[in-house]
Length: 491
Ligand code: SF4
Image (tube, rainbow, N blue to C red; front, top):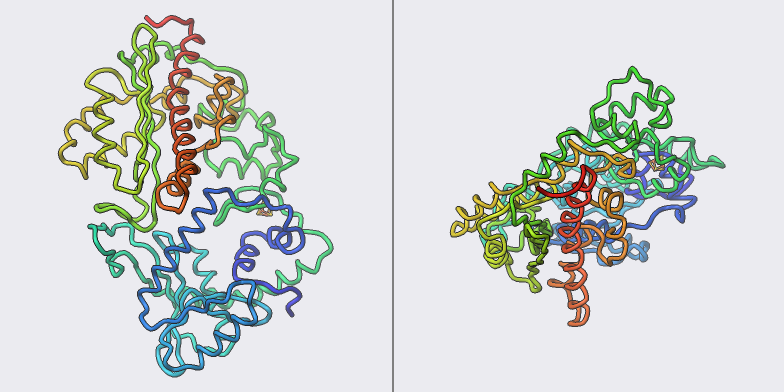
């Protein structure tokens, strides 16, 4: 029997981890609040849900919010009883104390309904089936005849050609009825187990591991891992299979990994936990040609395409920074930032080509810039040949470091956000108001698509320029410090 009121999201949290469900109900203050980029992802999901309603003409939205649940339940019941209502959006229903707000319930005839869950994802995931299973259980428990369960999601192959979005092509609707039926039989025992756990005086003893990140990032991760050492074996980079085996065998830290365990080169460096310099590092660093450009893009990935010839979630560059180091040590900075809501690609590419010129290596940190340059060439035929030449000059500092250098302060991560503070502590990111690319994307969208006033826009533009500029200055300094590590002096 129900001991606590649940919701669809709490049911899904309980399927991920009973401890998570317990903490959400009894100690929600222990959760880490969502970051701005996480909130932006949630907002994007809401926008997709709103757009999906256009698919169902004659549908009516239950406008009462989560703070007005009794009113929302009453309104939903009225709409169900009205045969003229073709579909209900955000309908509120309850069964056994479980409340769901359903994206779309579509009326098929006098008694039968279709349940449609809208997701801003590109494909169906296992958790979506559980999501539909609990909703269909509640709908049927509340007296509706559910004739089919569908998942409506984005088709990432859809290319927006400009003008009006073609929703028929942009959305895919998959019939998941059979898969959901298979899960439905599990719902009651799953609920009973959750209700039992919730009556316990303490949360269940569930150790943190890979399950905390799938299918969702658990907000209690910081709480559950606060006692863990920096050398916890879970932080070993690479295959999560190996971590699982080690944890199952009671290995708690990397220092306890038995010698017979086969590790990759990178894992071995992380385990050894001492600085390591490959004999080839110097030659690799000297393979650059001057002037050395240091290039970084910032991008955002709208779920709903905004500009012509883009697809859902297509990365859209809006900014670049280029620090140019000449052979005599002089460093010059060029940058571009689109500060309004127009398609930035043509102007961005034109200025970039001017900045990069025709000579010198282009130092980047990862393969992402290569992908973006090719993507720009695909939509800008006038620059395709020049952008291809740029790609041939790329020189990836990340792969040089991964293959030829390790510092214990990397703590297993080769992200520039880990590498820079380890090697150039004076130039870390913690003095910046934007400290990672995900937040940069959120702030850019706020600057160009929201109601931000002029002052706020100017502040965001400055913060974006500081952040992207830091990424490229970081590469200049990393190359310099690494060169010092191998004996200094560029030849
Ligand atoms: S961090 Fe992991 S163990 Fe802790 S509550 Fe979340 S899912 Fe459960």
